[in-house]
Length: 449
Ligand code: PHE
Image 1 (cartoon, protein in one colour):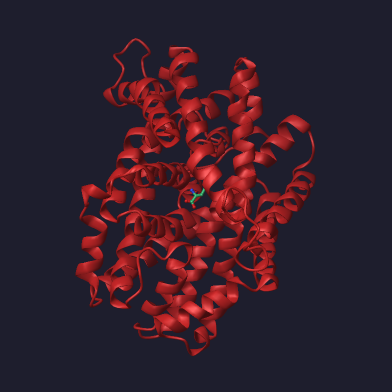
Image 2 (cartoon, protein in one colour; image 1 turned 60 degrees about the vertical axis):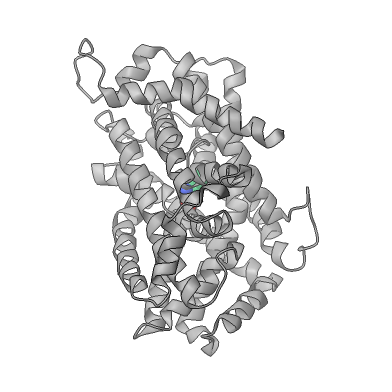
C-alpha cells in the first residue's frame, strides 16, 4: 500500500519533478517576460535567481516533504512547527488556486491552437492576420471558457487516477518528446533571417535595463518556473523514496528547466525579428509568433499541431502538480477520497478560471489594483506569494529545522554521518540561511520604496 503512493523509479522522480517545473512558464511566460524586461538583462538576472535562490529553496522543500512524507499542512504539523510556519502551507494552497486560475486559460489556448494548426490557422500567415486571429479568439468569452474548462476536466481526470498511475506515466513518455521537438525547432530557428538579431536580444545583456521591474519579474519567473515556494515540490518529495538524492535532483531540475526556457527563447526571438513582431508583445507573444515560423516549414501545420500538443502536455504535467498540493491536503487532513477531493477542487478552480478566461473579453474592464483578474492572479502568485513562501521555507529549513535532519536529508543516502559535509550541501545550507532570506527581503523592500 505504502509503495503505491511513491514514485516507482528514478526516472519517475525526475520526470514528474521536471514535468512540474517545465510548462507554460518556460515556453509561454519566459519569452514574453524576457521580451518585456530587457532580453539578455532579464535572462542574466533570472539565471542568478535560479542558481542562488531557486536551487536551495527547491532542496529545502524536498527536505521537508521527504522527511515528513506529508501534504503541506500535515508536514508542518508533523514537524511541530509553531503556528506561524503553517502559513507556508496556506500560502501554497492559495497560490495553487490562483495559478490554476490563470494557467488553465493559457493551457486552454494551447488546445484551441492545436485545432487551429490542424485547420491551417484559417490561411493566416502574416503577422497582422495572426494578431487579429488571436484577438478574435481571446475576446470571445464562450470559446475561451469552453477550452479552459475542457483543459481543467482533463487535468482532474488524470489527478483522480492518483500518483503513480496518472502523474508518473504521463510524464515519463511525454517530457522526453518535448525536449526532442524543442531541439528541432531550435535548429530551425537558427536559419531564420532574424536569427542574429534575435539571439543578440536574448544573450546580450544591456546592464542599464536592470531595474526594479526587471529584478522583481525575474525573481517571480524563477520561482514560477521552478514550481517552488508553494509546496508543490514538498508534496512530490513526500512521494520520493529514501534513495532519492535531493541536492542532485534540485540541480538537475533547475538545469533542465532553464535549458527549456532558453531553448524557447532561441526559438522565439529569431522569429520575432524575422516577422517584424515586437518582443514586448506580452502574453500573446508565443501564440502570435510561433505559428508564423511553422508556415516556413515543409508540412507546417503538422509541426504546429505537434508543437501545441506537446505544449499542452507540458502544461498538463504542471497543472497536475499544482492540483496535487490541494488534493493531497484534502486527502491527508480532511480524510476525503481522492475522487471527492478532485470534484470539489475541480469546481472551485473551474469558477475562478472562468473569471480569468473572460479577462480578455467581457471582463476586460473589471480591474482590481489596475489589473484584470488574469493579470492580478499571475502577479500576486508569481511576484509575491511564491517568493514569500520561498523566503519562509528558507528561513524554516535554514534556522528552525534541526541541523542534523537538514544535513542528513541533503546528504547522499547511506552516507556516514560522521564524515565531513560535502561542499554542495554546505552551499545549499548557507544559501537557505543567508542568501535566500536576505535577497528576497531586499527585493520586497525595494519594491515598497
Ligand atoms: N513551473 C510551472 C511552469 O513553468 C508552473 C507551476 C508553478 C507549476 C508553480 C507548479 C507550481 O509552467
